[in-house]
Image (tube, rainbow, N blue to C red; front, side):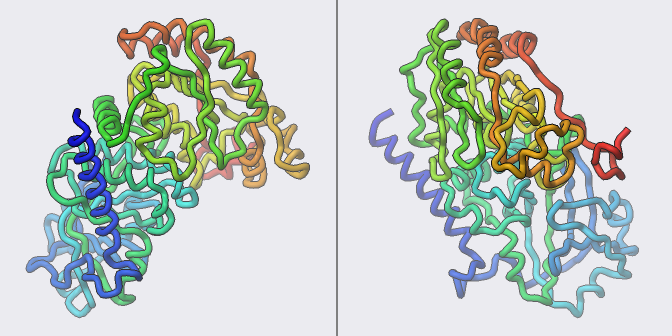
Length: 473
């Protein structure tokens, strides 16, 4: 490729990025007199809400939004509405869907202030609003969106609604916007879809009822072991996702290490791993026998997506503390690589906002099909370096006893103590398999997973219980 074509391609993607940012400015306080992103006029014929639960997604037609709620209008005179699926299911973790029985849709909205959002709207609930700037939490949601968009042009949304997140929360993270641009621009010849956030809905006139023509809410796969969207629905979707990443401008996979590298992922914003020097020394000793160098890697919030793809594109073994950032990095690995998860004894809350992170890396690796996953869990909560003396009172608690918020938060703040010798032994068993370059990735994955530890995820408590250890059988 010539320098001129490369620079032209870079300018084209940069123009697409600024088009996305300009599109997002619609309806913001800074835009002032910008035209609204909705239509003032309603369609000539209004129908009751119709729901179709398809594979991995719920399609909802003619729903209404008003005062931080979605409403399903159930019109007894509309045969299509009566014949549709139930309309009282949880539509979105952020904004519920409530059934509203009326005698006639036209009469119900005739005396209301109304507006209309035409076309297909994709609801994309961000799993962890408190970590909006973290690329890992976005990968969890966008992997499922990428699989949905693989269905072709008919699945391409005109609007993407992220109701649980304010626009400014992720506006200054270049990696997030680049990933959103890549996913939402998949196979599109025209402009990118309009992105709407919580604050865009909050700025609607107080009395306005906004009708949405067609909304898609993504669902976990039917065979998923956890109700989370942190995975692709088919291995070919993961392959096309990585191909799109490799085609980003300025991506250059280094060739200085022909056998790949062992990469120790260090999240600058997490407590991380205690004894990092001894662990890195063990990795270098294990890799030296096979000509595989080991190195630490610590991307920051401002690291461009293309730089992360370049840095991880030649990784053969990726190690890191369990969490969404490790899952995001795993999505960038080449086929046949190994992602090795370092787990604390306490894996996190079984329910609530942090529950989706449990097993995120394992789910993503399994959905790719060409990535081996292994993990080594700490023997107990005592294998931690506590943040302060108050947190250390949980050192003797068993994992099944640590279900309360204070105990979970104390473990989340603590640094993980890793058995470096055990990790060295695991890599000594894995590297001979990984050193066979050019073989079938699926065969390498099967062989790796047969010789490496794969602890199960901690089970979630049954519905209707407190989750505390004395409330479980």
